[in-house]
Image (tube, rainbow over all chains, first blue to last red; front, side, top):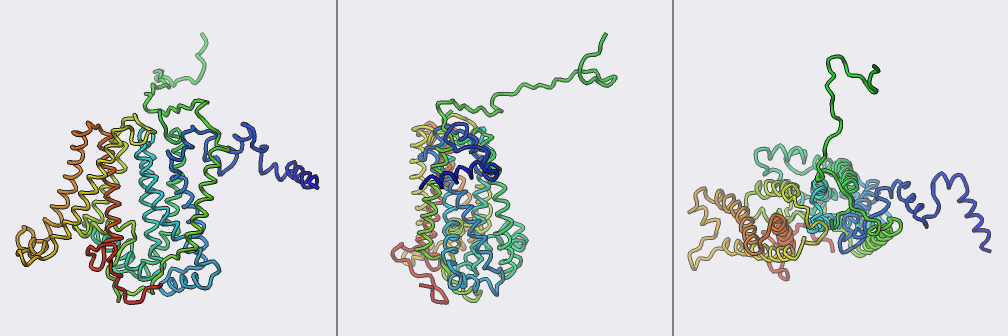
Length: 243
Length: 269
C-alpha cells in the first residue's frame, strides 16, 4: 500500500518543479545541511555553523529571536487589522467595535496584536539586558549596540503610536500625557507637538499621523534597522561568546 | 630595455605608491571558531528556534483567547479620567513628571539617557569578560549592590516626596509646594523642579560609582554595570509605582486600596 505514495513522492522529488525549488537533497549530511541554510532566502540569515554557546538558552534567553518573531506576528496581525480599520475620528472607534463584535475572529486578532505589542517591549528590553550583562556590546560589536538602542526606541514609538488608534478614552488620555511631554520640549515644544500631532489638541490630524507613523514609517524604519542589526551580527563574528 | 609590466605611470608622475597597508589587529574581526566548538545550524539551532516560536505562538494564542484587549468608551475631550495614565512602558516618565519640570523629565532626561546608552561601548573598550555573565564574580556582586542601592534610594525618594507634599498644621508645615513658594528663591519652580532633581540625578550615580570603586575596586566595566543596573532598577521601580501605586490625583496608594479610576462612563466589564 505504501509503495504508491512513496513512488509518487520520489517522482515529485525527481521532477523539474521540485528541483527548481530545492537544489539539495534532504539535509541529513553535512553538505546538504549547509546547502539547506545558505540556499534558503530565510535561513541564510544564519551562518552554516555556530559556536556551541550560541545554542545555550541560559546564555541567549532567545530574546533577540523572539523580539523578531513578535515583530513578524505584529506585522501579520497588523496587516489583517488594516482591512477593517479607518483612521478617522468618525470611524476608528466603531471599526474597532465592529472588529470585536462582527468580524469573525476579529477580537482574537486584535488581542493577539495588542498582547504581542506589549510582549515585544518586554522582550526587546530583556534582550538589551542580556546583551549588556554578557558584555556583548564590546568591540567589535559597538555599532550593533547603537543600532539595538535605536531599535528599543523605535519599539516604544511603534507601541505608543498604536495606542491612540482605537480612539477610546484610554487611548486619547494616555496619548495626551505624551502630547503634554512633547509640548514641554525646551525651546521648540509647540513646533514639535504640532509636527507630531498635527495641531494644538488631539484630533483627526493626530489620529491620521499616528496611523501613518504606525503602519508605514516606523515599521519601515524598524525593518531597516533590523536588517542592519542582523547583518552586523554576522559581520561582527556571530553571537558573542568567551574569547 | 623592456618596459616594466602593468599600468605605466604618466610622464612626471613616476612616484611609486604602496597599495598595501598595515592593519592593526584590533580593527579587524577575528573569529575564533574551532571545529570542535561549533554545531551545524541545521538542525541544532533551527530546532531551538522552531520550538521557541511554537511555544510563544501557543502562549500568545492562549493569552489572546483568555484576555481581551481593553476598549473603553468613545473618546471625548469633555471627560478627563482621573488619573490619566500613559501606557505602562512610559509610566516611568510620567512618574518623573511628578518630581521635576515636564521638559526635563519627558525630553531632556530620556534623550541624555539614550545618548549615554548608545555611548556605552565607546567608553568601556576592554574586551575581557565578553561572553561571561557579569564578567566575573565582582561584576555579579556589583550588580546586586547597585540593585539594592538604587531600589532603596529611588523608593525612598518617592516616599519622601509623598510625605513632604502633605500639610501638617500641627507642626506648622504648609506642604512642600507652599514652603518652596514662600522661602525658596525662584519659588516652586527653580529649586524644586530643576536644581534638586538635576543635583540628585548627577550626584547619586556619582556616589554609586565612587562606592563601587572603593568597595569592589572596580574598573570601567564594573562602574558601567553599576550605572546600567541603576537605570534598569529605576525603570522598573518607577514603572511599578506608576502602574500599581498611583491613584486619583496621581497620589500614592497601597496596591490593595487603590481606588478605581474615575470615569465619566462606566468601564467595560
